[in-house]
Every structure is written in structure tokens, then in C-alpha cells.
Image 1: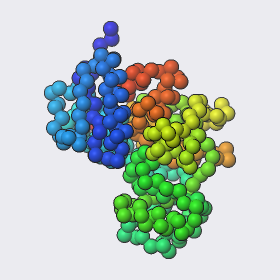
Image 2: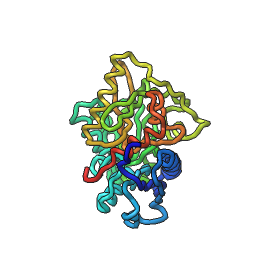
Image 3: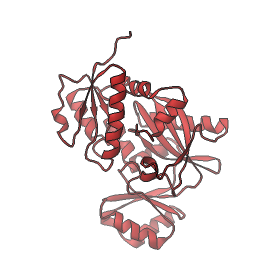
Length: 312
């Protein structure tokens, strides 16, 4: 039997973000998978105890199963670095940049990765004329998508068809968030690509019953989205989207597994965002892509674990 790189694994799950329920589900699934693979596994919930109370002596490696703010935005990763414990998924800066939609958009542009036109609006700058001047200057057409700059799982995302509705929805969102990103809505196929340890794994297509692949479409069976694996693309276009996802992963210096979300419209791919802590639930896409490629859930989780490190 091959000697394991790590023996004692701490699965960090739950946390305090709006994605806590999904994180708990992800963490429990990964806990079971690692147990099956023969690791000594325990769990830690930052909502119950501060991350600096992690027992270093009994932890060889951290499996980061947190989602959302304070979990995949560089905050938890800063604690793991301070504790000098190897951890899964991307490092501090990569996580921060991927979670901050404005930062990631600028990185996409710098690397010539096509992304929808966008601009941001802060609570302090909230004026109708500023919003519509930006829409005109950026040549953004309706519908317009408004979203918080640092939420995950499509929390707070709305699509607006006209100026009146847009202004009203922005006003409501700014009661909860300090800054929003507005971008042009791109129609077409929804295609998502998994990359693991720097290598593209596959592309899946989503056909939501809802307007777009929002929180309910992702995590509730009632609003189940149809998954098509592999995505319905020509071989040339399929390989192209894999290459773009790999380029995105590397341009943000990501580690472990990422999922890049695209729209395919008029023969072009538009990158919406990259997720450095994709869900690992029964409805999640990365395990489904892996399964199609002959990788079991347990082996997928172990692959992610074995890429754990610090100082990245």
C-alpha cells in the first residue's frame, strides 16, 4: 500500500457566510470520502471556534470546505498560512482576487480573456445619473446583471430589463452590500469547466429551468437544472473552452480545483467568473464532470487533498 502524504486531516466547514448550508454539505461529503480512503479525519467549524484555535499538533493538513466570505476570499487562508499548516485549494492572493469580481475581471482583461462589459457602483456614489452615464459610456445594453462584488453561489444576483427596474433593484441591494458590479447580460449556452491541479477536467453544459443558474438552481432539487455532460460544443470549441479555463486558473495562480463559468454566444466564450472553492455536494458540477472522466468522488477529494500546500 502506498504511503500517504498526510495522515491527520482537518475538514474546515460551515463558517459564517450566506453559503454556510452548502459548506456544511460539502464538508460532510468530503469528510466521508476521506474516511473511506483511510485518513484520520476530524472537523472544525469557524462559527463555533476561531480559526486560530485549530490544534496544530493533531493536524497534518486542512481540507478547506468553506464557501463564501471569510472562507474562500483569502481570510481563512491567512489563518492557515499563519498556523503553517498545508491546506487545499488556492492561496491567499488567488482566493482574494477570484472572490473579488472586479479584481478577477481586470485579470481576465489583462490576459486577453473575453468577459462581459462591466463597471462598479459604490453605496457612496449611488446616483441615478452616474449609473446611466456608465451604462452609456461602456456601451452596455439591457438586460443588465447586478451583483455584489464578493459573494458566491449567485447570492444577490439580479437581472434587469429596464432602467426603472435596475435603479430600484440596485437601491435595495446597496442596503446590504457596499459595492456592486453591473455587467452586460450575455445570452447563450451556460458552460462550466473544472480544472484540477492545473489540468482541465471537462466542460459541462447547464440548462436552467430558471432565468439563470442562481442559488436555487444550484442547490435545490425542485429548481433542478438539466446537466449535459459533455457540453454540446464542437470538438474544436470544446477544446477551446478547456484551454481558456486552464489559462484562467493559471493567470490567477490558483491551486487544487477551480470551476470557470462561461456563456457561449455567437461562437464566442465569455468568462463570467472563476470559483476557487466549487461545491462538492450531490448536485455539484465538479464531481459530475470527474465521474464522467472515470474519477470517483473519493479519488477526486483525495486528488484535491494531495495538492495541499502553504505559502502560495
